[in-house]
Image 1 (cartoon, rainbow, N blue to C red):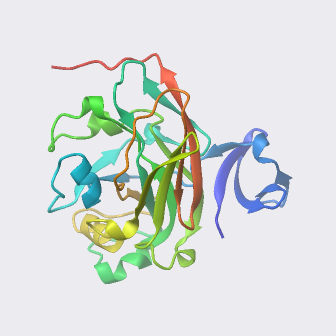
Image 2: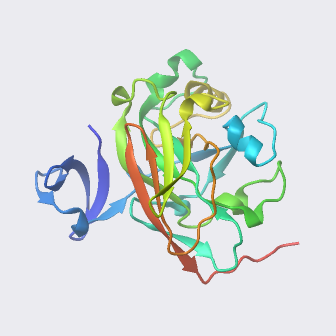
Image 3: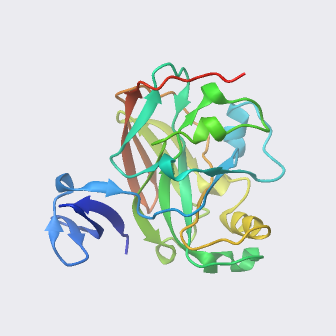
Length: 254
């Protein structure tokens, strides 16, 4: 059963979907309008993949990587469903990235690809916004591009792995203000979910609550303040958020 996390009436609760709104763990029913959505998990380490779809690499004029291009994300980047993402006032190229997020359920190291799914508890949706004004080069791509506060909505649900028998065959879509702008499939990943779990575990211990963001397919478009962006993955639901203008300006560091 899909589960989410919300803040309501001054406290934090796990919720499940109900025909009349949302059901709290104590059985109470609340309307979605009464809650503030939180990320469905509180990530420990968040790993993110660059260029993990060949078609996305191509649209950015890169070759697909020969080895996973991995970077880490800070906790302040993560926000929940219906949250607001800040767009720096002088950014010229900010875009969404709909991504399958893999949530680790138990600790492990030196995990084989065959065992990888045993260490996954479930899946959720990420929208890993990029501010490409900060992109330097292939080898230093993503600290300031991908680690700004509020730029990674996550949710709304954590879907148990048993409800997603084949995470490598899911449709991903993005709509901006109701218009379809991105569509792809997880089957087109360069590096698969089990490969990534195995790869990361060869040099560090994976822990419960770790999240792996697995990259995005082609179909990126710029977003502006006021845009409403909906990222959807087959079987996982729909994650919505709104872009707002931030007074924080991009500062160049030479």
